[in-house]
Length: 186
Image 1 (cartoon, rainbow, N blue to C red):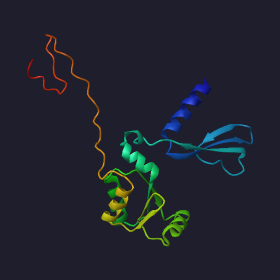
Image 2: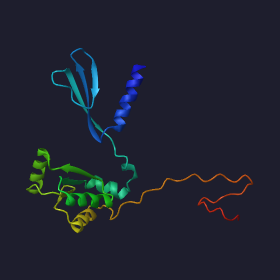
Image 3: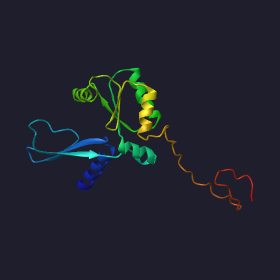
Image 4: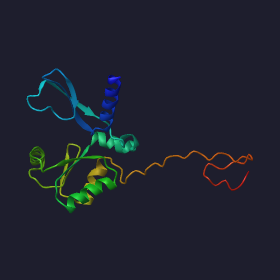
């Protein structure tokens, strides 16, 4: 019974975890096994194992084929920080086109060093499309040109409406059309 409860909790944790997270399995000094999303406290564990958990985004299956193909071949990364309106506009621009993108905050030292190597400074926002295109600053026309060249659609995909079940036929044998009109019989 305890194993079933543990398995259910573990599955819920895996489902609700971030897109890329770590799971730690560690044994404490008393021999008890722990599973957590945080590393064990110092000197509390005899043995530690770290596993990377990668989950797909819920939207991946709903993206059009062209968007998925472009994202596979030319992934988009937005380097930003708390730069105010410019970074907000940059983020909104990508979202309005339906571009799947990763964000890296240049406030962290590791990301700042990566940005320095990439573009020679700490200017944000920076758009990276694939491996070759690095655009400093936000300029909508230049960003659109780079995204178009990479094969991303020019506009956000239309959200698919969930199909409704047709209404049941009337008791007297009349039928309603699938579009909901049902005005006349043929």
